[in-house]
Length: 342
Image 1 (spheres, rainbow, N blue to C red):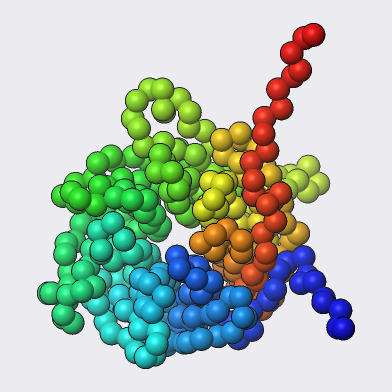
Image 2: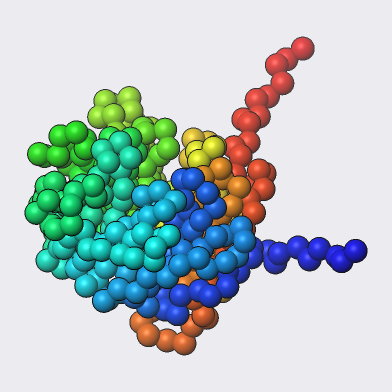
C-alpha cells in the first residue's frame, strides 16, 4: 500500500499553467472545470479534480477575463477589443462582437440569457449569444459609462459596474436604459474588484489601498447604516504601514463568507456579517491575482501571479493552486453569548 502524500499547504498546483500573468479564473457552475484567462493570449480549460488541461484557445491579444456559459462553452474578453465564444468540445471559437478598446470584464447572465461586457472604451455592452454570427444580430445594447470599466458582478437581475474614477453603477438587467443607482465608491482609492453577495442584498468592493467596503443595495437609512469598510492585506515594518492592493474577492456559495486575495500573497477568509476574519492561508509565492470557489464550495482556486504593481521585476512563475476547503476555514462561528445568570 503506497502512502498518500497530502498536498502542500498552498494546495495542489495545476500542471501546464499559463506562461504569463493570470487575469482571471472561474469554476463552472456545473462541474469542477476551471476556465483561466491570461496575458499570454490564451484561455485554458482545466479539470481541476483530475489536474488535467482539457483545452486551450489562443487570441490576438492578452485575455483580460473569461466566464462559462455552460460546461460545453464559455466566453472571453480580450485586449484585441474582441468578445469571443469558445466551444470546448470542438476546440473552436467565434467572435461575438467588438468594443473600441480592450475588453476588461465579461459575465454571462443566466437570468437574461445574455453576455455582458465592460471595456476601457467606457461602455457596457449586452450580447445575445443565440444570435446568428455577426455583430448586428448579437448586440442587444450599448450603455455609456462614466469611465473605463474595471470590474463587473451579477446577482439575479442585478448588475454592478465599477469604473475608473471610483464610480459604481447598479443596473436592473430588465431595464438597462439607465442605472437603477449611481454611486461613488466609499473607498478613497482606485477600485480593483467588485463582487455581489450571493443573497443579492449588496456587494463587496476592494481597492488598491488594502481595504474592502461592504455595501447594500437598499437605499433606506436602516440598510445604509449597516455598511462598513475594513482594512486588510497590510503589514507593519519598522513602524511603517505597508499597504497592498486587494485584487480578488470570492464568496463561498454555501456560507456566504468570502475570501480576499492581495498583492501581499495572502488569502484571507472573512465573515462579513460578524465582521471577523475566519482564516488566513499560508503565504503564496506571488500576488494573488484571482480567486474562485467551486460550485459546492469544496475547492478554492488561487491564481498566484505577479500583477506588476511594482513594475517589471524578477518574480515567481505564474501558478494556479487548487486547495480543498475545510469547513472550519469558511463556516461562520456562532456568536458566543454570555451565560444567563443563575
